[in-house]
Image (cartoon, rainbow, N blue to C red):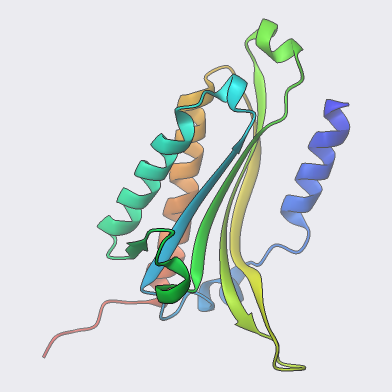
Length: 166
């Protein structure tokens, strides 16, 4: 069962993924973001991982001058969400062997207007994802999410170079 689940997760993280210059270009002009962390499999990963990842991610974004909006004001003030999805995919034997399989994806979702009919939708405009097999679950998850947020910030900074003051 796990082999099939991993194939589905891997395929969905590769097919249709925004990449390259178009993904980077979609980040131009973004000044504020909302952060949403979704953890599935907390019984093995630990209930404390979501708040830790939230703090790590929000701090990293703020350090790079992105305004982080809370859920209460997000819809009014922000049209972009940094979505971190962590899915523990190991079946029960992982608890006894000490090794776990985890799917991690970081996506940027934005409100977009479709060119063909001028309707609006939410679309993933930037993403990064991977599957890891580890015995050090919480620290590896933090490391991978942090690296993916750094990739996002690198693309964001390339699309939003600092303006020179006169």
